[in-house]
Image (cartoon, rainbow, N blue to C red; front, side):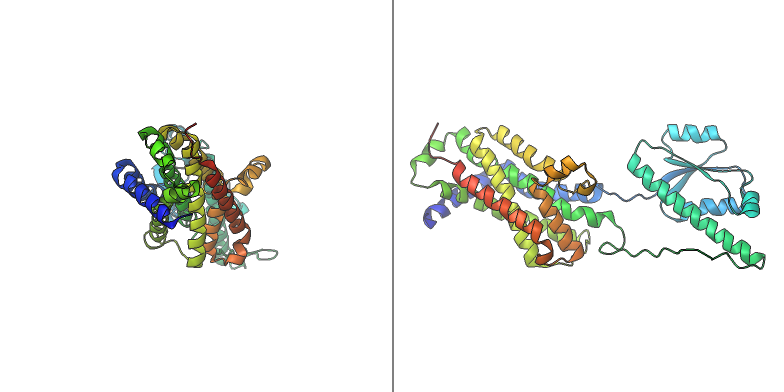
Length: 378
């Protein structure tokens, strides 16, 4: 392998990138747009769920219960309905996602028996939001009931019943504020790299075929490995720069806590960049159309990264068969590493398994890429 020919090939490809406005737009603008859209547009937090209240009693106790819902920040009372029909109409029109019905004898039954029914009606068209909102509502009602029991016992000069009570004192590690942004943003880096890297390199060799310059390239003394490295080096620099930009944005713009090692993060990012660039290069070699190569590369990178890497859906909640398939998804290992390094501060020893899998993936892709290009026209 000649270093001179390699540099010449890399220089030629750099000129192609500079002259190709589409490639420049993908390389420079797409990471910024994706970071903004995914960073601000995707959230798993449930806040300010529209709540309709059907208060039949209108007592101080019932108003305290309603205020507890609003004060939690998880609900916002958008309508105080006068009847059950009003509740149904409001939910049908999409004005509220959940309704609370407080019966007319709520305070009396609560004072007499210590328990009182409160009905909640939820719009389950979005099951994820509904399940979380129901859990929040149950917690609020339980807390209000406990506070009422304590006040009632003190007002009547008796001690609150504590025998057999168990207090749960939860502690949350790694994402203390339970902010979904800290969970999502590290995975965004993988999505952006997979999209940008594969899209850019899928055009490299296919561009030579479409422009009729492949014959000239084949007639030169450059070797297949020099072609591969010469074409990938400029894109590796661009991809690594995009990744660095996204990682810095995650820390300094979105304020995602970073507790890990910078060298570990850079090495794993380099491996992942090499994988996505190699996949795009393989598609460009085997498919001689730029449009066809870019579409196949998009299918092989974006869909697995967003759906099967753990970025959007937890892998351990998937069916067994699908979990087995995710072992073949290279982005799974990078997303795991990103979250471990960012949130847990995991050293290399703790992420040895996903790191080894990603390194093996990179090695296989490099070997396949070297063997893919042949200097012949057939």
